[in-house]
Image 1 (spheres, helix red, strand yellow):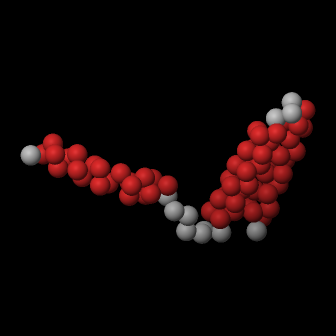
Image 2 (cartoon, rainbow, N blue to C red; image 1 turned 120 degrees about the horizontal axis):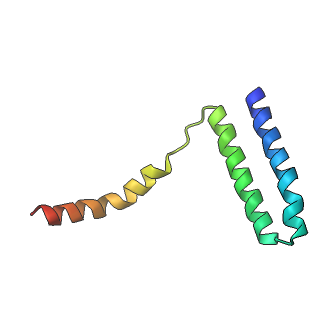
Image 3 (cartoon, rainbow, N blue to C red; image 1 turned 45 degrees about the vertical axis):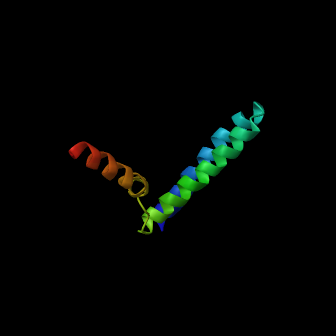
Length: 78
């Protein structure tokens, strides 16, 4: 519980520090991207604290490239 509160506090402080600079320099797209990435990072951090099963992105990359790898190694092997 305290860990989640600390994560939310750090996220809030980060937003409070960075938002004025992004607004002052009229960076609307950057502000939107900042908040999206901050929300994703905060959500993943809270999920990690709650010991949720978060999939590893490298597993998806290996799944996509495995057939190509097998085909190339099969062609080189013979």
